[in-house]
Amino acid sequence: MGMEGQCSALVEYFQIAATSQGQAGDPSVLNTTRPVPPVRNEALIQHQQSLLEYHFPQLSSNVVQQQTNQVAGVLAQMAHNQQQQYEEGKREREAAKVTTVEKWLGKELFTKLLRLLRVSSEAELVAACPVYLEMAKAPKSQRMRTFQTKIDAVWTSRGNKYMTYVVATAWFQNFVNMEWGRANDDSLITGFLGNLFAFGGAG
View 1 (spheres, rainbow, N blue to C red):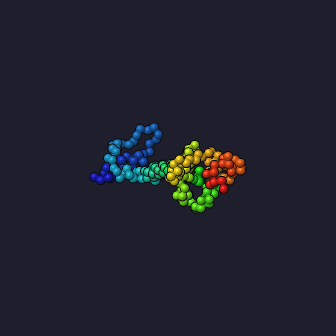
View 2: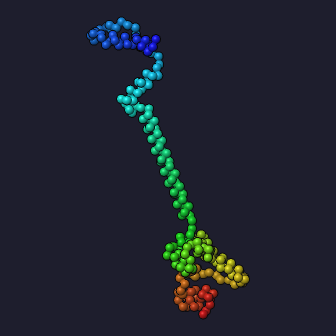
View 3: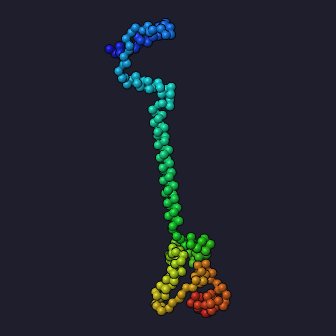
């Protein structure tokens, strides 16, 4: 029968409608069988859709898909950026937790300490005098105690079990600040009358 036969009633309907000379309100002069809609035809549906998309590009299924892909791409990029920011923040927080001698003493004193000990880096400093890193890692209130413990360990390692030296607060501050000079000659803490072992003897 073919497509022409299937659409013959519809074609005849429009032919008569196009040539009718009736006036408005007149009874219909059409005397033909009411056309029956053709069965679903995928080719016609696709053609109709292509015409709609041609005249109204915003209705294109490809455009909708592209927009969906763009939205998905933007969301993925946002998620990626947030993940990067989280990782960077995490690394910064972890780096802030890492305690070094330089962070504890400050750049100026740290540089002075390297020069006094004749080392060129913190790694060499820690290898030569581990107590500095131990004090840097210790809570502020425990640093002098950490230093005292190391001094006691040195006495013991040298066989001086009964010799002790108690680190005074002022002396410890001088040690940390690298103020090796005497406050004055008569001071019981840093002067000539101070603890002889603190300065290697009376001279």
